[in-house]
Length: 494
Image (cartoon, rainbow, N blue to C red; front, side, top):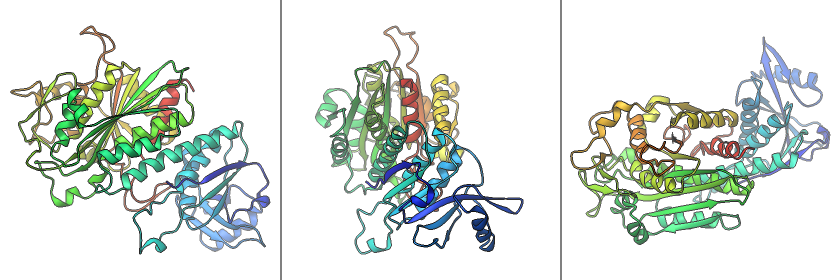
């Protein structure tokens, strides 16, 4: 895990001992304006001479002044918290290979200072565990980041930015691992190791206990693999918590499609199918690290979806936790099967809210592209999730749950089918409609309202596009970590 050391200081700019000092500038009406730092007129002249355009991700290195830090100027074309987070992260990402960086950006209050800290920390990531001959060609991320500025609660701002960076790095590390090494058993072990020094408890169901406790979805998806499935429950329950949020994550450590086999090119990248489980693990641990006054329970639904003589077949019927039966019509619609078990288990504790996170459908990416995650579910909770996304700078978009789609997954032999083969209309929505069936109720009465629930489909943005941007490099993006942590803070009253 690569996480930089962070400091926030109100020392004057010349006092920094960093190797590179970053300031911000923009161009408006063909005029260069340096927005932070000292000797701005001189710097503006230099930027005009080199043709600085002031765009996003535009970083210009300039000669240092005397024995001090060399200068870098990052484009800041817009005002606001999100722009500062993006610029700080972009600068740090592009300055990989530099040991220490200082950022002097125009952050005016604690929220903006926190965004600079967070963006900078997120930009300092690299994964080199599997590089041998090519290791020398990969620059080390920035190891030390100093943000110049002041704000009330500086220590808390640094602690939160560090916790966010650690959570994102944990997700990225897990997703980057090859499926040869990360499978349900080793994923569970890594979850236990990550939680070792935190006030959380970790409970693991192996295949025998899954069978005894009726987790037929997880067992069914995993039975085609020689590496059996697992369910991991991570519980953070501080004594002062008045509310409880449950997080359920899809953890398919590799998705071949099962007997409904994917084409060869469609399997490349399917190690990403466990991103949801990594995300809920990271958020629960971050909540514990920050001592949030809210109970957070993460359910990691882990299986490897493989074709073999023991794999489930189309038309097989699985019995989900709680007894509801599902006819499997597409073994490549497996994520919703493991999530169904997780949603039922989470509902049994009757939390105040349930959020599931999954790289669930290619249809979500068709609808929203590769930067936005789809959110659907209970209106009030969806609004809270969207608000948390906006506050944290995450791109989330609301989607409906059309009631008429429920009839399209009726089964001739079971309570419900997991897919409607041949019908591609509204695939992401259909998955949400299926999941909704497994969300429990707030009381024992049949007409009791469902527990507030939101489904976040991160299939599009879980893996960033080939070209890096802002604080996001190539590979996994750790999307929704920041939004879900902010949601936990909101539910806790912070």
